[in-house]
Length: 110
Length: 117
Image 1 (cartoon, rainbow over the protein chains, first blue to last red):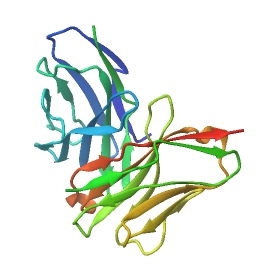
Image 2 (image 1 turned 30 degrees about the vertical axis):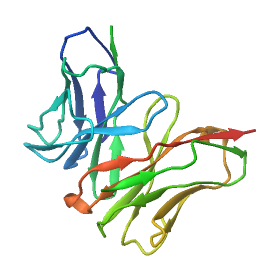
Image 3 (image 1 turned 135 degrees about the vertical axis):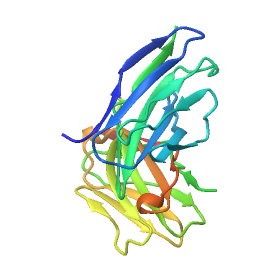
């Protein structure tokens, strides 16, 4: 089955730690996106990538980093510089008229 | 800059009735795509329907249709014959550019739909 897989589903981070969220797709889509969603809010764009080895900052990139070494993979690192990382993180991939999301990762700072 | 606006934070509809969720957008790019998603309480984002800026006809997918009024820059989602399972958050989104030249995919603030039995 083609789709987007995010892991882990739940993640707990201690203050000052970096954590990496995984996003893998087997849809052969070129473009991939990372979003943050806070309770009761819409989706805010963190980073996006149109092709391998290239990515652009979204509206709230501070405290986050990404890489795109393979077409299938677009991991997001939440660094210690992100002061309020507790949120729901969603990854998406797009090709033509298709835009699908993974199941999301809930990150909590403990 | 591109912008998406959903002005209805919450909506109620009676089961089996039709409901329209509003979405307006702003862009200077003549090429763009509009998407609607459903987000139930589980958090997953379910793709519902797509409309391209050059599409001549309004998009339809089962009980979902998109009322696309290009001159007014609106892309309202119509759900016919509402079901209890339609209760969820609904998001409108826009991506400037088409095919693989597209850029950001941005979202509105969402509308929470509640279907009453």
